[in-house]
Image 1 (cartoon, rainbow, N blue to C red):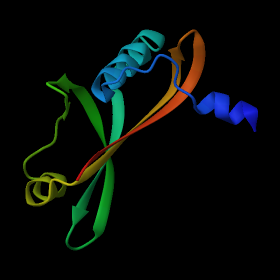
Image 2: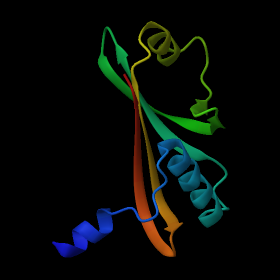
Image 3: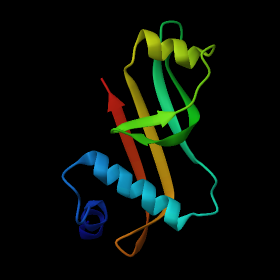
Length: 111
């Protein structure tokens, strides 16, 4: 059990979660320069189907906001306009963090 606790502990964690996320993105891009884009999943709330989850491409971080692109004629766009509550997940399968190769899952919510 001691190993699990050690694995779950983030050393040198910045106080600002946006800074931590930005550092993880930089580390992921540095560790995986061959990957042309960063996939993410976004879940929205839909009146007909409930929670809908789909993959989109991360485009950047601007003023603490995660940027991605979608078309205005999609259900996803209509759901975001109607109800901005979302959950976004990133899975960084290979990332070097503090000299250790790791797997990270990052969850971002908007309520």
